[in-house]
Amino acid sequence: MEDDPVFRTDLYRGTAGDYDRFRIGYPPSLFDDLLTLAEVGGRGRALDLACGTGQISFALQARFDEVWAVDQEPDMVACVRAKAAAASVSNVVAVAAAAEELVAPEGAFELVAIGNAFHRLPRRAVAARALRWLAPDRCLALLWGGSPWRGAAPWQRAMDDTMARWSAMVRDRTRVPPTYERVRSARPDLAILEEAGFTLLGTLRASLDHAWTCEELIGFVYSTSVLSRLVLGDLAGPFEDDLARSLLACEPSGVFAQEITFAAEVARTPVHDQAT
Ligand SMILES: C[S@@+](CC[C@H](N)C(=O)[O-])C[C@H]1O[C@@H](n2cnc3c(N)ncnc32)[C@H](O)[C@@H]1O
Image (cartoon, rainbow, N blue to C red; front, side, top):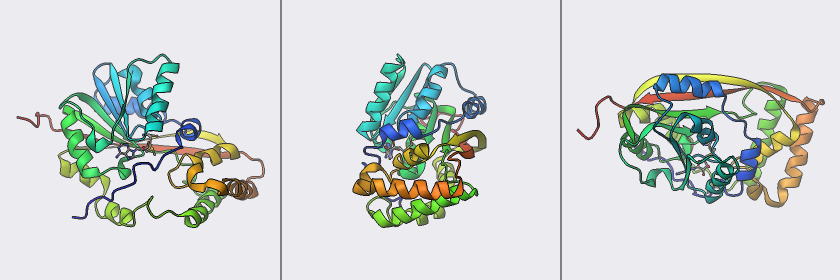
């Protein structure tokens, strides 16, 4: 069995500001449905692994005694800390650690959530650890979604094409290892969870309507690991001009409407404590 590729540990360097400003949060109804399905909420600890700027942590913090927000990139962790301080939120604990190296007690969490990030992690190692970190009969959720270019509208196709063109132009082969797609399709995320000992409960879905502006769409692109401001460097200006021109050619109003879709794939740990 081929191992997951190893990604660079600084893929998101410099993106925290754009990430926090331009990513649209997961819909509250997705969390409501998740907590209902997972039969948790109100107390205990949740773990937001690969938390970025804390989209999941801050959405969940009122529903748990404590949320651990864990990310390996210092900018992301600093952003979570700053947001928690600014909002006087004291129960979001920001931890700088790789998901596969986090030290946490066994059975300590009522819920583990991984948002838009499982594909970047050493999945088997993280699934095995999450199984141990969770209490018996508790859930791991893989959250996904929010990308503006996913859809059939002409502006979305134009955005996808423009991003593909610029990604090819600035491609840094150390950012997406060549085996990434092959390994992930040979061994899908849910198969990894099942092999680790989780039982799959199903996929929750939610959507929300959003009208993007050009500035927001450009900012979203800067929040990605493949076309961040750092990756584009001096080409950021020409990239912005190109993307804005492509978008406005499809939608001269400058309003880009989308029903943004999100999902949570949910899996449960065995009822009996793994340690017995
Ligand atoms: C696309 S962002 C997702 C952020 C957030 N979870 C969300 O739902 O919006 C991916 C995040 O995963 C983090 N990450 C990637 N590999 C990681 C690892 N091995 N351990 C911890 N964090 C990791 C990155 O630093 C980045 O903040």
